[in-house]
Length: 382
Image 1: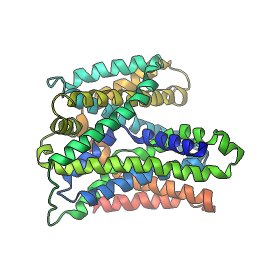
Image 2: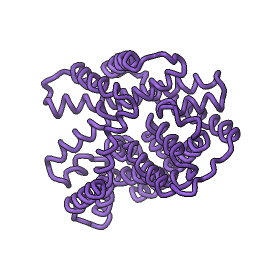
Image 3: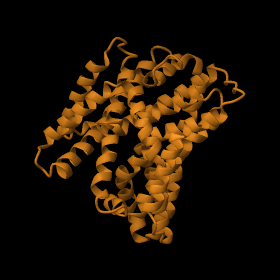
Image 4: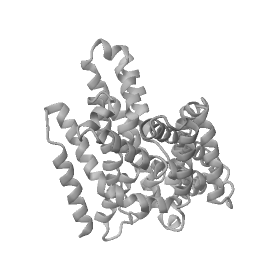
């Protein structure tokens, strides 16, 4: 019974680690673009949005959650430059700014005329206060919001899937739908999240009394936990892709960050939709606080070598995030898209080879990653 409890708690922790703002948007976009080929589109995003990030957790598990050891296989400079670039993309130049736009899209369901720049300023001020004070509100909100969002998504699925007919697949476009799913899975950037956020999950598993008494059990419990987390995430992705496909004609004119609120309003009615919207806003806030804190700490400790104080580091982080957020969700996606399209295959190769290294002693690393990067550049240029 203890092992079952550990498997469930670890699996839910893995799920929560990947269940962020982008995860509520990109599957809907995939479905809306699928031209009825929602199954192929779903397979695409499940590969890069679920399988690949969980491979990232496995790699970090084999490295005992030590990201420095993991990145050091690329050379000593990589232990600084890789985290800096990755945290920049996850932080003010990417996911953090995207959280602001998703929160704004959800808030507009309540107050339609709210401008992005005004909302972004207010949101950044709240993030600053919560980050500086290390407020206990954030972990409490995080633990409460995941069940609330899951319940809301379940209601949207029950009422939304039953009120619209399944889309008819177009004669062509299946391969493009699959590729769109693959690409939108890159946009979640959950593989990068696995590199930096999985340490807590691994520590939770490693420190359990049962795995300490018998370390051989840890790998079995890990895989069972990963199956729990991946299965839950996969079901949600598939449902969102299906909803996106079913409501595709109506979603064609809706910005990505407002799609979930629109589907909630259509399926649950005008009274229930604001509850979903506020849950999304608060979920974006908790994610944003974590990302802002992570980047600001790296900026203060590793970049400035403690020459700047924590409040200034957070202020710099949020100033960049504010200006990035003014690009809006689609603008941020267009900026990140080419970067992720070119680098993600190399990151996947790095992850797989790191697993091979720990399990079977595979030593070659830099050359295969370079080849994957160059090949992707060539394919993109053709």
